[in-house]
Image (cartoon, rainbow over all chains, first blue to last red; front, side):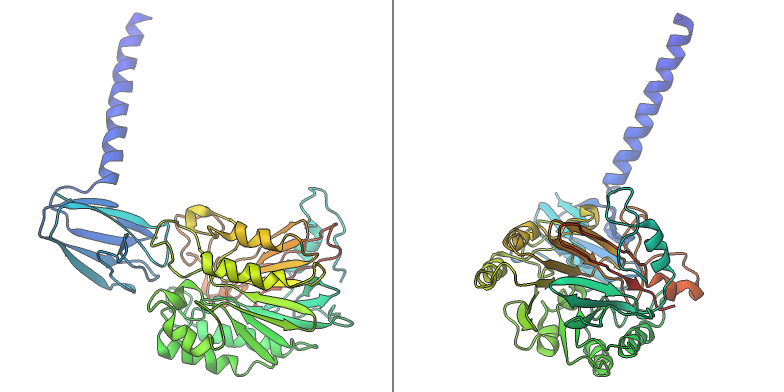
Length: 115
Length: 318
């Protein structure tokens, strides 16, 4: 039993690392990313981290219109209607966490972290 | 064809045989016949319409998305026009028309103009509209209200009485919560207005409520529901006959709960997937071009024992 138990544990650990890695890569973009693609009713990457002063650009590659609208009153940024292939850029001067959504499909959400 | 359910084995109000029969029917849009406060509906192609003896009929059109042109959905103007023509060709033309929103795709003046132009050809005495999010999000509904919201209140709410039936048009697409909920929202002002409006009516008044986004929760993951819809429905519970008609999800979904019937209509522009059956609620992919008009339709027949006979039939363009 012992002989089999050791390699099995090794496999489990490896699988755990792979899962954790792929989950992390879905949630956050690599440093330096400033482009967010909108496709299939989702912001991709869903979360990005940029330095203060960086400009983030959203591009709508979906076949229906969307917006990237910061949550808050008034919204800190608002792309207005983005039809297919339209894009919108916003420069984040101040550090903070900016949650945003699509005004047409409120279940679509994303986050820009500025630090 | 009988509007009654012949078998109801699963006790869900849906008779499979009747359901399949109705699926084979051809036509466009939904026609409703009001008879003693109970909504009945039938296909445009039905040879024996239940309109005979009914007080009146009306047609529900939805999600015309004028301006959309992607994939195989290249003729939304043509399919919308066809739906109107089918309504006009009915043996008993509907006297009212309700459009349950997303008239346009991007609220452009030319898109609204095209909707007006086509709706001019409908033979109904009066047409009523509520906005969808596509009519609203670009300019907070300003262009919509200017053209289609004359005489309405707030963001476009309205009420009217027709031959003893009380109609209420609600707006649940205004961005009142700034993204705090994924669902549609009516808002406090509109709810107060609704409560006051209904307070003066007797319990036996038949009520028809129409709004774009379903007032009950169908699939919150895609935003298919109304955050404060339950509040609105609580005001309606005491009435003997309530019919809630919505659009937004581009497919027929129906539910009967006590004396309330909930029904969503098909789009005249493009179909959307069943809840959770695709990665996103976008226009259905992989639909052959020659099947598009058959996708703009499905049919259900439902019966509610507590409410009496209620037959609901939606039909396809082809």
